[in-house]
Structures are given as C-alpha cells and as structure tokens.
Length: 320
Ligand code: DGY
Image 1 (cartoon, rainbow, N blue to C red):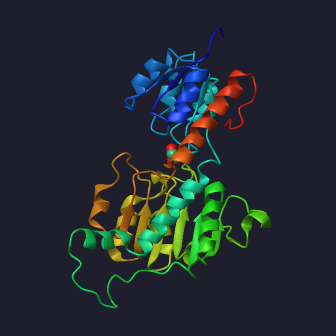
Image 2 (image 1 turned 30 degrees about the vertical axis):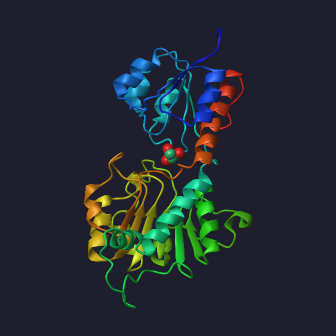
Image 3 (image 1 turned 90 degrees about the horizontal axis):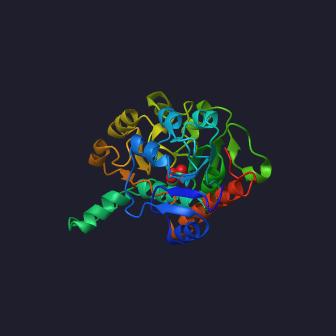
C-alpha cells in the first residue's frame, strides 16, 4: 500500500480520536454523524482499506458478503460486537477488533445509577418535584427498596460485571454471580458463584446483566426466569436489549413481581420501548453506559491502536 491507509470513521467520535485519526490515516469522517443503511455501508466500503464503526452500523451476513474486497479490517469502537456477524466477516478474511477494558468503569457506574435510581424511585420523585405536584409528606411517602445489605446477582462476571461487583460491595451488598467459568478467588473477592441461573435468580434481590448478546443469551430474561427472582426484585440492564423479553418484563412490572427496572438498553434502538414510558418505576437511559469524555477518548484510542498494529503488520491486541 502506498501512502496512508484509507479509513472510514462511520460516526462522529471524540475530538482527540478524530485528530489522531486524521494525523495517521487518510480518514473520511462522518462530521454530520448520520446513520448508514446496509446498502450505503456496502457502497462506502469500496473506497476504504479499513472501517472504524460503532455498534450502530450493522455488519450482518448480507453486508459481510457484499463488502468490498478492499476492506481489510473493521476496528469497532465498542466492546459489544453483536452488530457484526463474526463468522461471515472472518470468511471474507476481514479482521475484526473491539474495545474491551476501557469502558468497564463507565458502564458499571451507569449500572449503579440505574440500580439506585430504580430502587429509590428517582424518576417518580423527580417528576413530582419538577412538575410542582409535591404537596405533602408522610413516612409512607415514596418508600423504596434499600440497596445496602441486599443481594446483588450478576450475570456475566467479565470486566464490567466485576466493576459492578466492586461498586456494589462499596454499598454493602452481598454479591452472587453466574459466569461461564468460576473466577479465581482474587477476582471473586468473596462473591458467591452459581453454576446455574436456577440457583442465582432466587437469591437476587437486584439482578444486573453484564453478558454479551449472542444466539445463546437472546431472551435470557424471559417470563420463566423473571418469575424465579424474589418478589419485589429490581432488574438492571446495561448490556444489550436482546437479553430481555420486554413483554415479560412489562408483565412483571404490571403485576408488581418486579418492583422496578433500570434499563440503558432496549430491543429497539434508538427509540426504546414506548410501552415502558407508562411506568415511572422503569428508570430508562438512552444507551449511554460508556458515554463519558474520558471513556470516549479511550475507546477511540483503543480502536486506533488496533488499526495501527494491523497496518504495521502486527497482531491487533483486540482481534476477535
Ligand atoms: C459497547 O461498547 O458495546 C457499548 O454498548 C457502546 O457501543
């Protein structure tokens, strides 16, 4: 290849990331931050050696099959890669990377916010005060669910799950978890391992999801599993919307089996689930788990590190 590699940055990334990308690559940047259809992605791919996308760009089997031969690497600006059909991209000889580690703390912070906000009725309280409807007080008023001393179940004890466990330990919660493999004691930090969801769910006063969306975890929290949670449990999801059966969640909120939910991820994004809006005990945010300035820079730099390694002939650190 003569000259700098041609790089397509599909969304508007942090200023520091774009500055570095423009210095080191022949970069085309989506300054308007528009989204792209499958056909547009395929068409754009003809002009680039590398693509730096976010989870908002879909590289399913159809797109993978139609991508230009010119594209050698897709360096994702995300840890989740459920928007990429990895076997299909691999079959095309395209290298795929992600950005693990760097967003764990930011995402776990948001999970904590959702857990606390859902438990202590943050939306309902904020609305009362904001709308000038706060006209009385009594000991029975806006009573929520206490987090300290409660049991937190974590599904997926990877980097984000462990950061969430650390946060929750600071609040005096008892940590239980399910993971494909039991962690070594220095990572467990006293958390109680459950080989099966059948024993984890009944002890989870709060349940936080931190596993990837895969064909195996699709609809993981369905009606039967939600029913296994204790009466009045709180469900938190900062991972992916596909993990939760949203109809089952709604039904459990309506019946009171779930006291509340805190959600940063939805089956339909952007947009979310309009049926959730009728319930103030569903605390919702628009997929902003990793949206802090420091983490956005770190994600952008990690994606560029992977590109730099690839074009220098080295193995990218985060190759999938
Ligand atoms: C991720 O990195 O997977 C976050 O959801 C943001 O894309």
